[in-house]
View: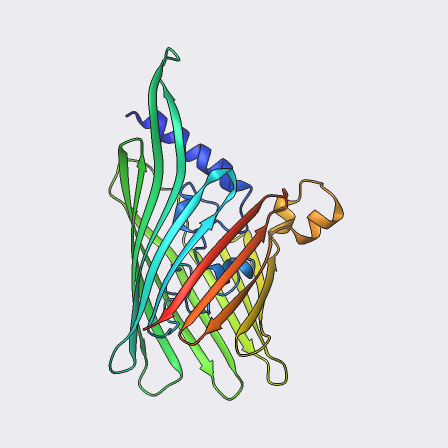
Length: 304
């Protein structure tokens, strides 16, 4: 397997995800940063301060409960991801989680230099993530670290990336407000390929309104001095069983391909709902691209 074929695969996947930049980071390895939590997808990518056993794209200092989660997400171009995760609570105000995310790009026809078929081959990415966090003494401050192992497979050719993330968060309990800062994608590669990853800085805030059953999430992300992406999302508690989520980002301007006004307005936006019954929470999400394409996600969470 030649490096030229690997380069072709990377260009192909980046091209596909360039239309999906509201859900994927713009790197040569889009599988590194897919949103695998249905709750995040339904808020248009917002929610770095919302706990999720599935997602590696949240602030690792955010404490979740004892939860097992699984999800399936369908992306454009026949791409799909399967994800499982579990979060833990330990003694002495410590917590952590483990997740496995797999993204399948599909089956492709292979050809040699003479355009003779060499059979079919598949392409996929797998990411294994573990995180650990701790509350600092009795202060309303938490610190967290996260490490990920990323394995990309392209027709039998594999390469690995190791990445690291860290974050801190502050919670004002009486004001129902949380603020956090995290850095993602500090990475190194074990292969000879040049890894085109940029550390991503995220500043986040969340607020649970006092007189309205609504939690608001705001996230600002930047991978270089000229790139700033803003995500905003909301989660409504309709009653004790139902939740409704909606969100968007300024990536709608990058996705605008001069379609009709409706597509331009709702581009890079998501919506969805959650249904909770005792210890089980089911989430469903839809993400709308400016191109008119859709992503859909289904997720189940079980308290353990």
